[in-house]
Amino acid sequence: MTNSILLYAAAASTFIAGVLHLALIPMFYKLMDITVTTFFLVAGLAQIFWIIPVVKKWGKPWAHIGIGGTAVLIIMYLIAVPGSGYPVHLLDAGIIFFQTLFIILYSIIVGKNKVQDNREKVTR
Image 1 (cartoon, rainbow, N blue to C red):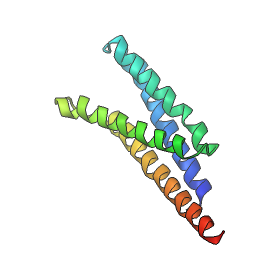
Image 2: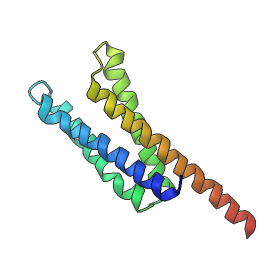
Image 3: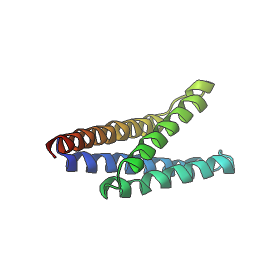
Image 4: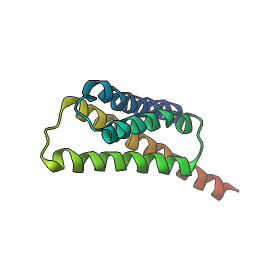
């Protein structure tokens, strides 16, 4: 896969995960505490924002923050929902799928860029 396809696929996956996080708010606002609502709002907006560093190629620090932040969201979910005995819903699985896809695709991009950077250093 070319880097541009990977970039747009990674951007799309984080966008979809962000939209799904935001979709939880109106669906369950009567059942959620304000702190949980705020968490989903911030997580969703952060994931949608992350399209910019991906597509604009802001560099390794942004890539590592995006990958790490998404991994933290997944870990928090695993502890809070299935880890606490709550049922896993299809929407939850969709969010986890797109977050995992983002991590995989963006990690591939970072790895390819690292190999390319190393090749350029050797040819100098």
